[in-house]
Image (cartoon, rainbow, N blue to C red):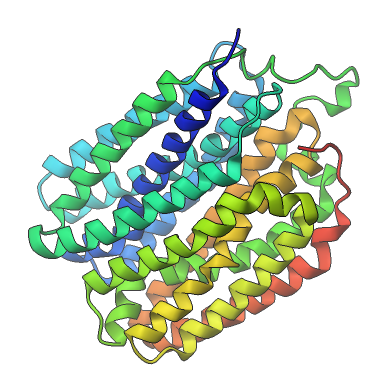
Amino acid sequence: MKLNTRKLMIQYCILQGSYWASFCVIYAFATVFLLSRGFESSMIGVIIAAGNILGVILQPMVASIADRSEKISLHKLTAMLSVIMILLLVLLYFVPNGLLAVAVLFLLTDTFLQVIQPLINSVSVYYVNQGVSVDFGSARGIGSLSYAAASYILGIVVEKFGTRSILMAGILVALVLLVTVLSMPVLSSSAASRPKEKEPEQNDAGLLVFAGRYKNFMLTLAGITLLFTFHNMNNAYLIKVIENVGGTSADMGRMLSIAAVTELPVMFLFSRISKHFKSSTLLMVSSAFFAIRAAGFMLAGNVMTMYLAAMLQIGSFALYIPSSVYYVNETMLDQDKFKGQAVMTATNTLGGVIGSLLGGFLIDQAGVSVMNLAGLVMAVSGAVLVFLFVFRQKPVSNI
């Protein structure tokens, strides 16, 4: 099958763009939406954490289907999960404002949003492993640009039209995601895209076998969990952090936009950067930036200094995302790569679980300043663990 690689790259850019716009709408504005429905910060933390826990459980399971199934392609699996997420958003739009119904539906929406993420990343790996050139960094840069646009526009729209507009926006961008993934070419089944291994002990690794096979990788993930505890704690309660220095939901939207825009240079230039530096080195640098950004948020005293702290996203999250995808593909055996992407994403999600619960508790019990201090401790501890173990996992294959 002859591929139009330019068209494929455009499709993958739209796929990344629509996913991260969805992520912005559903996750970044979760607290704004749930506060408007009468939930307290600690309860919001429980809802988001529960969705993330289900995501952590389901991500490796779904990845195993993508790794092994010859009947369900990676594209179809992503489309099926997207349809479920859209249906949940529609139900959430029409359901009465009962706390239990809203909590359950939002929890499930968040779960499927988390489960889709490693599949979106794995689509690029799928084509690269088939010998088709896909620039993940540039596509992820479009994702950041979409996140920035969604943040800025939705912040203004919510202020003018209320929080129901969050659900409408979520439905629209999720539909774009669905249509895009269904339009992308399937070269072969996900299982057939990798060479068959002759040694049975290397086939279909369960999680315990996987962890034993990649011990230093798992220890690196412990550090990344702490980094994302800070990252998600800050993002989940950003409206509270902004209000603490005199800001509004529109200021939150602008801050999210600034953070996302600063990601763009790294995302678009990552293919060049990766030719000069190992992915493990870039992960180490990004972990240091997470710690510096945490210090920036703790010290910020007004909205303008919050904007400056947000710009440190350029070296933290922006560098981490493509580096982590490359790192997994470099250190995993072929049959473990989808699972590796899922475990990496599950680690980010686990940080979200801890961050959501801890952040909600600390805000209700001690205030935003104490939450920011806890975030700094988490980020510094995580950076130390990444520094200690990221270089020890020996590469198995190259991207």
